[in-house]
Length: 478
Image (tube, rainbow, N blue to C red; front, side, top):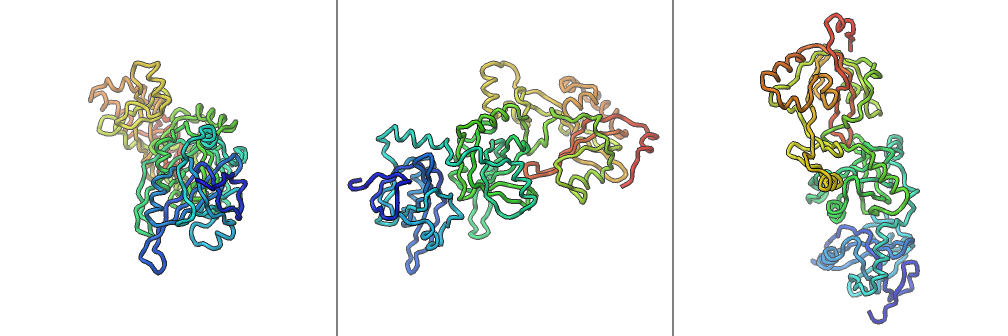
């Protein structure tokens, strides 16, 4: 450390040869290795994005042997405080034009026109020794103080609409709430054949509570998201996140790229407002339950008559439009109602937040619910509700996806979920044949498939029996 001169990022220029920059690591790239030209030796490169004040960030590129770069990657984690000792200071534009690796399009945008470069025998990077605890605390606090204002973040609804008009690649700033984690999936790279991990999150904000998929491919960020990002409790300020359109999902999606920065639970009024929205937002399962049964539309306002064929055409066929859901009145026969067989009749939901629980779950995964139950509650932490698959058939086809759930099911069946559990097999069979193969006027709400709902979902809002003469009068053709 002798002979080096402590410098701030804002103070460096290309004439400085012996600077010491102490900064926090905001992000890092995945190491890249390559065969050195004219040599059997493998070389490596890794890039770190550093910050030492509320205003300035800079990129630091480290070259070395493959083993040296792997060691840097293992040793330095996101949000570590490090010392960059005697780096070369290269004007960014000159450096990016002279190198093929990781140009500015694939790394965070710096606030100064320089790049720090470390090579074999020229400069090094060390973990900070933590002697100055005040300085260390100040640097760590920068994790929650974005270098761009929170008020400049766009709304999810606005960026979704922009993608409908422009499918070109875009990078945007967003302030979002982590709403759900999906299991990590493995994807084989078409270019290298390497198996890569991808973590998909569902993120929301007050403008679009249905959620957008955020894909993360970087192993360090995947690890951090799994360890520290809590559903409905972690707010992210995403800077330069990639906005695109997925043909697979047929929807706007977000991608965490090498250019993206994320500030976790930043401090600001906008974050406070988003957390208040989280407290009132309905808990839902974006994969298995398309929408909450607690927010049903008024059946009296559902008047548009459709056939089964029209419902499918509107949901996923040639009549599909940009709306996410629609309602319909269907006149049809109930042809599937497994009330007394092996099919699912009852499901469980959390008594605190009403979130749907998996079949083997008895406790909600939400830390807020677990805390509430541990302090104030001594009984069952879940309740049963009707969640029955029903199928309706008319002269145009059979609607397979409908579910008769919650309070609607109790009203239609004149039976509660608790009473159902006391019925014997013969009583269940009698209930079944009171409804099966009879004709009904059914009012439905249909939510189309999307990136966060992989199948269309149909929920019965109301249903009542109709006689053949009324059915014939209401019959429509399509």
